[in-house]
Image 1: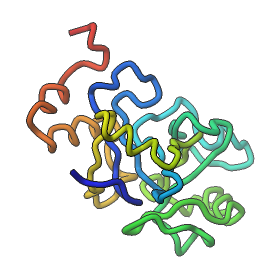
Image 2 (image 1 turned 90 degrees about the vertical axis):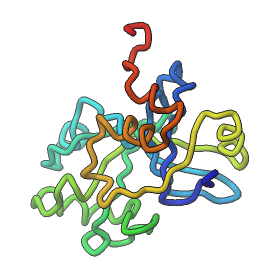
Image 3 (image 1 turned 90 degrees about the horizontal axis):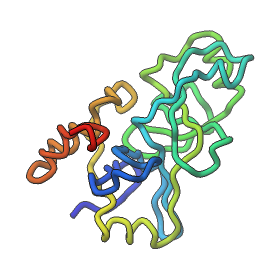
Image 4 (image 1 turned 180 degrees about the vertical axis):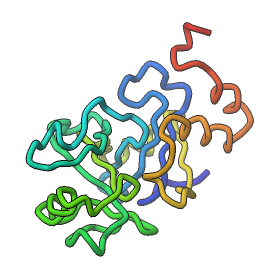
Length: 183
């Protein structure tokens, strides 16, 4: 079994269908150590843009639901560290945060593409042993992030595709409707 690590993906097991926050979620782990784990849900777009939340930034990029923690805070993950100073490397060309004033200028000047950055309200977080327990109880499985650009990946099919890759019993769940009662 693959272990959690910065840059890897947590895929929600089909067994957590009743969890509104994490049902069918794919989470990019941006931090994983002995004290905690932090990540952002990649496939839960919200119905508003950066400009809706921060009117002084002229940017139509969609905001995503990052997780249930600190939902009044805006976070961003990107692959443009040369443009956004003070970014923290997550893994393999993915960075978290950075200088917000520089980001604001880049967005207002349309110097970033939506395939280079993703914005999140809130984050997903776990205390020291909490994620390990959730993995043991089959709430999640871990996958390598093998996408050339995770920000350009179709968020409507990413969960289904990861289940199909895993195969076996997961194939049946990959094609199940979002609301299982409709089946």
